[in-house]
Image 1 (cartoon, one colour):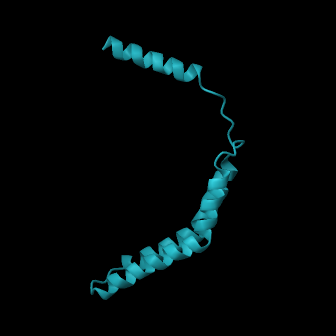
Image 2: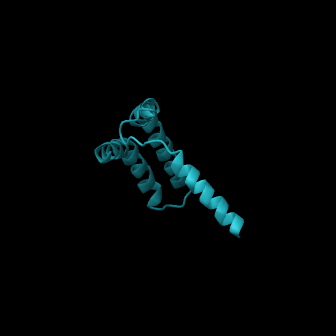
Length: 96
């Protein structure tokens, strides 16, 4: 038990001692990946995801078991892919 507490204390000390400064909002490490992913989802990728979701809903409707989720989920996916990404991006940018 004492060894576990000692090991935890040493790890915590090392973590705090060797931690570098954090620059919130100034780091551009993931900008390229974020831009590519955002462009993909706002462009053709979002359309493909929406169409696939709609096709899944149509197939489920054709199977004979109707539920409102088969219509609501593709609509939600389309709205999320079309407007969700810019909302999240602007919120994160405004927060940072």
